[in-house]
Image 1 (cartoon, one colour):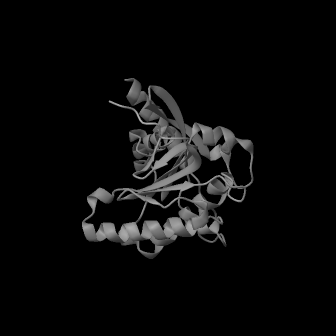
Image 2 (cartoon, one colour):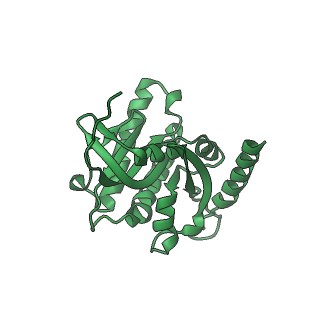
Image 3 (tube, one colour):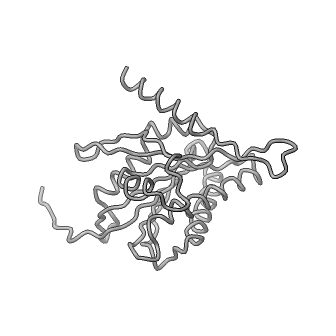
Length: 230
């Protein structure tokens, strides 16, 4: 098979979300979930100051969407964790409260790397890593173990370069190293973050956020690893 020179790659932040359980829905329900997904992702990006000039045309994947953001100073990678993800979580929580019969939950992934773009679309190892993390069986299993509306996986590159650096609005302690995927015969680690929906104590004024996710996630990770090694 002849090889083609794809030309030089471009650096992009890779952000993708996937609707949980959409294959169990009929087409009419899927249409509503897709519309809600697109609206929420667009609003969360706008809240972070990310507009059409900052990203490539979105890549539709049926029950998921891929956004490739160009590296510009006004859109540092930190804003995805400090603004985009929290905004998306809040909208998902509001959606669940307003329409509990049609709950919408998402898995998301954040990575960055070199991407090739041709007339057919986009490709490259960085995208393979991102989607292996997003579709990892362990991530799906962890999602089933929590009630969080959004479960985020980040690549090791994002964790090391952004999460653990102590930037404002990013809680490194909420991330757990839980994933390992193989791409091109290389192993790549992934880190998982999730926030439990807010619960309130009676008689406590504004109430208190009960974050039990780290305990649940740690137990689920330990169980999954034991099952894998068995």
